[in-house]
Each structure stands twice: as C-alpha cells, then as structure tokens.
Amino acid sequence: MNFIALDFETATPQRDSPCEIGITVVRERKIVETKSWLIKPLYYPHFNSFNIAVHGIRPADVKNQPDFAELWPELKPYLEGQLLIAHNASFDMSVLRKTLATYNIPLPEARYTCSLKFSKNIWKGMHKYDLKTLCNMHRIDFLHHRAASDADACARLSLKALALTGTSSEEEFDARMGCKIARV
Image (cartoon, rainbow, N blue to C red; front, top):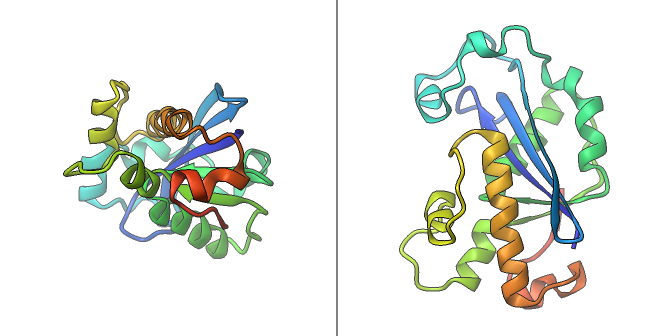
C-alpha cells in the first residue's frame, strides 16, 4: 500500500492557522521521504501561548516563511490523488479543509483515514490511543508535536498496523482495519 502520512501544527486554536506541515511518503510499504515546511500563518504574528507550549514554534520561526497559498504549489503534488493517513485525522483534515477554504484553493482529489481510529480496532484494551502512547508501545522514537516527526511516527505506526492485519490494498482496508477511507 502507498500512502502519505500527514501532520499539522497550528499557531492558534483556529483551524486555518497552520504554522507547520509534515509529510511522510510511503511507497510499497517503505518510507521513502519525510519533509516538513514551516508556514507563516494567516494570523501572523499572533500565536496562542498554549500552542507554542505544545510545539515550540514561535512567530520569529515563521517570519520569513511562505504562507499556505505560496506553499500550496509545492504541497499539492504530494497530496493530489493520494491516500492520506493522519493520527486524529479529524483535526488534520479540518486544518487542511479550513485553510484551503480561507485561501480560496480547491480541495485536492484525495482520500484519507485515521490511524487513531484504526489503532483502537487493532490494539484493543489500551487506556490511551494518542500517538505518544502508541509509539512508546511499539518502540517508535519521535519528537512529539513537530510535524515531520509526527508524520513519520504515524507512517511507522500505520505500517505496523497494515502488516499485523495483512492489509495490502485500499479495497481490504475497511474489513481488515475496521476503519473507513473517506474523501477529502
């Protein structure tokens, strides 16, 4: 299975305030690339102190970075026509949708699913299913709340889930992973 693991960090509670995006490209069950981009959010220089405490990204870090509309031509080829996987995809997909709407950019033709949801079906009985807990259980090292590292951790966790369930195609995904694939 080929997919793109995706993670956003935001500057504020507003979903259209991404300040970092990370992607990990998986081809034929192998991680082939992990990248991240800092983003100058729409509300620059306003950052919420809680968000800074979570990810450590500050206004000075994004001062000279492109805004999302400027970055989109580089990002779109990674997302267009792909299966996207995010941990807590409801958050990351809402950031993508809201940000694209804010900049009046059409949604990409892509599909997505959630590693948080399928983890609950595969590793039953855990008290928590956050990325940190699951990565600790599977001995996946990562720097939590930095987009490239979170995307890479999501990809590694997803690869473990796919292998454990014997899922080799999107057509088998729902039945084996217990989680639907939706359209962006």
